[in-house]
Image (cartoon, rainbow, N blue to C red; front, side, top):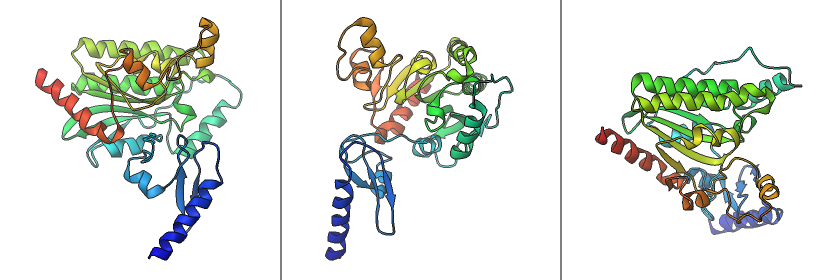
Length: 288
């Protein structure tokens, strides 16, 4: 047993020594399956990463989750029911190669778009949920993303469900031009109607949440939670520095910086997120 462990450890050390720059790389062999953390550059067994809900046990780096991995980690087993899964648009413009790119991402991710919406239960509390998936064109928001989010807000309104949205996006999808920017107003207006009707809205900001998504529904929650070390902002760091002609702090546009400035309510580690969301839902339920 010790000889096998020493051999495995030796292979791990050799594997880790190959990489001197932060990157995420996965190698799968019969006896070797590791992931390199992009933050601390440590090689970690994939089973360990999975056990920690895709969080590095060395430095607490939160790896991105797919929409359905997020669903499995938060909501009651088998309770999620997807809606509007086949929503599509016939009003796309003629941006070069855009349709081919959409088709490619649909095949690679098995998603129709960059957000999954539906209903679920969290410790038996019924909720409406939207989960963005950064694998699909970096979670960018075009017409269908805006439409699906608007529809799930309206479903929560009709059924009087609490609403939870997990954000992960590079912003508005420029291939769809002005139609993508219109989704900012569209989703925000739907949330205002939901709010006026007494609806409860929770947002969970994950890495990254930027651009038109951060400038609309991402920052409109009654309670705004963020995962640790997430990039959250609107314009890029270099653009802002050139505009204001100042050097920005090293932690600028991180969850920790926004929490310090009062833009978000709490930073919650992924292992505690399910319980924290449940506490928020209970608080809302009991205060009605």
